Image (cartoon, rainbow, N blue to C red):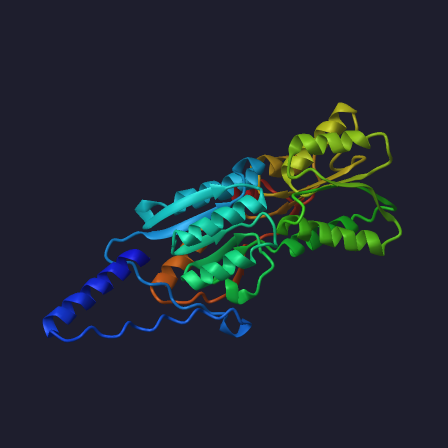
Length: 343
């Protein structure tokens, strides 16, 4: 879109000079580079497409095989950013932050109109964001936040990961156990989801004498790795599995089942997971799991509307938009909740 507009502008300028027969006019001064100061937090409106021209977007996401959440998130993005909906989209999926950053940098050099980011890591994006701003590529975050000044992106449609963690830990504290001996299975280290879901639990364990870690280790969102972690401490005393996604919770439960250890409602071990998988909701509904923190993967429609508004010259009403989420437990979850929120 940017290249076509530039060519058309040049052609009009040449024709007008030829018609007048005058001397070439001085070249126009380059447009100022947008400031990265916090005071310039609202980017300029995106240029409107010429005619039926497609809006170009680069979509950087994590591996859809990472979890059911990620599969749903990736599918929604691909179903939304299509030619039929007015887009020419390039998709890249990788859980490696360095690979994500390198690909995003190439997309900026290719002059995409919008760069949509679900960053595998919260840090390391400064150069990409500055180059995007200089190139006129507008950045929208989805799913996960990163550590950057708000002036460096136009909007963020994300989950409130610290709130997810606090809601889960508050629920766990309300269970009133005399002692909390926790197997904590972490997600991809340094990701927004891991930091938020870990942070609240770390604070509670540090503050309470009867809260203890039996083990705290990353399974990098992987079910089989989570099973191995639990197997490594299966003979120790524990009564809580706090897994930072549902796939890892399922791996942990497989290790419990292999040893005949009872878990779920009214049983020996509390099982906790996160995300939106319908099968995991059903585990909670059946009482085999105790809790699931909903993390809503369906953000594509909101991102689409933000882009359409920007192209029309309308800035987002909010800089950060949190997707609606909550915690569900085996005492209060209903089939209607499963049908409404499960993906």
